[in-house]
Amino acid sequence: MADQKAVVGIDIGGTKTLIGLVDRTGEVLVKQQFPTMITDSPEIHIQKCIETVHICLAKAGLTHHSLLGIGVNVPGLADPEKGILLHAPYAGWKNVPVKELLEREWPGMPINIANDVNACALGELIFGIGKQYNSFLWVTISTGIGGGLIIDRQIYEGEHFIAGEVGHLVVQWEEGNLCGCGNRGCLEAHASGTAIAKAAKEKLAALPRDSPFSTYFIERKKDITAQSVAEAAYKGIEEAKEIYQQAGEYIGRAFSYAINIMNPGAIIMGGGVSLSIDLLEPYIRQTFQTAVISEANKNMPILLTDLGYEAALIGAASLIYADIYIGPIKEMNR
Image (cartoon, rainbow, N blue to C red; front, side, top):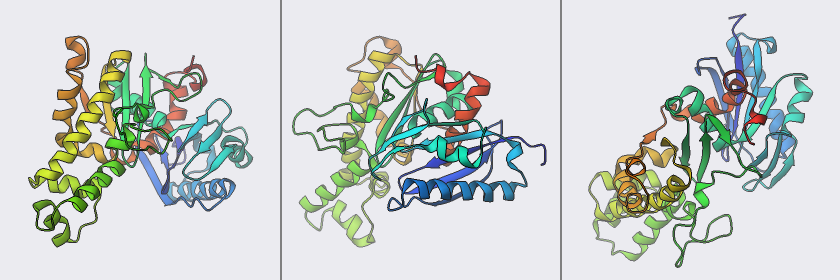
């Protein structure tokens, strides 16, 4: 493998950091993960990333001379032109010079950083089903909800690098749930995995202990998560189905706003909640079809990523492969 060329992908998440080597076809050659400890300083965390990159190189039998570059996903607001993590609210990290810290270990190495969801969109464009479309909206529905825009086969980040924030479109104006961003009624506060679990806990507290919904969770001693609520819905428990119906309706509202403004070729979804697409999609479509213009928009494809669990890691590597396949990232924003 001495002449194998690869890109390092570093995916820094809220609970875990996944690092791997990705080849030109999007195949992950080797990967390793470790917990993201928000009690660490960002400098300590980046040093752990550097050490893990060296472990991955050794596992693959490669040296840094085989690397085409390093792509880094960061869980928050990023300035990709300067290579800085501006703010990761969950960790309290601010103005972290990610690129500079990595350049100390690998001077002269091409290094690109981006918001994690934007990187996922880019990975879908280069290596996933997104390659079939000139423009699409990527949406991650997981603990939170994030979005990335691909327009004319380029990632669009906006004037202040926050374009595509579909999770913070307001979908409930009357008595909306409080969102982590400080506003009320955001999609993230009503249809994320966290919001689905919260709705289930509230329903459980309000129902009698002998109701089918209560019995399902109490007898099985199941933790209430978006996944366990989906399992209950698949077993036909009406209250669980209603929670996913409501989430689907909220997602449909947000999608209708995005579709009317952007007119993408498709909406592509990733994240754990998206795996329950068959529970959500009928209500997503039913809702946005009453709110979008043109028959083309009413029949918008809603697709699941085919990059799977490694979508974010492949997305990180795509921050370098984009330079090779579709032009420098810094030229994509304007």
